[in-house]
Amino acid sequence: MIRSSKRQAIVEAAMAVMAEGGSDALTASAVAERAGVSKANVFHHFERLEDIVLEALEAFIMAMPSMWPAPETRLRDWLVALGADTTAQMEADPALSGAYFAFVGRARGNPALRHRLAEIAEAAQAHFEAVLAQLAPDRFMPDERRSLAGLILLTGDGLALHRQLFPERAAEQAAAWSAFVDRIAPEEQAP
Image (cartoon, rainbow, N blue to C red):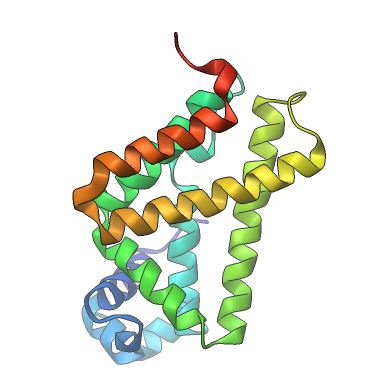
């Protein structure tokens, strides 16, 4: 999807507002002021405020280079890259990562929003499942692949959460991700 500069400014403004003030700070007035547009313009581009954040979250996830590995990529290399991209994204865009966790908190009390976030998580899990089928076609049975894709999603979210909350523990987080990779792709360990 090609985004207009105003649409992109609205998305970036919403992320900044949430990162600075939490999910309660996300109002049309705050987003419009931050983006330098009118409230009417915000709703011209997005039906609801939540749609702004959902668009940003989907873009955030799918923009990671490791989400699109080359067919010849080894499973182990993909998993290592996925962990590195996750932590790099969290460090490179603290406003977005802060907004992500604020938005997750907001979704707990909003069933429609929670449902939409579940759809995004399911799409990410299905994408991971497809990548596993591509990179290790004979290694896992379909049920194992589905379960492993879910585990990768959960572990990646945990890595992102810990990097957001405890950046001073980056070395421990990297070691934990490495141990996770070793469990999934042990035969690919370097000598």
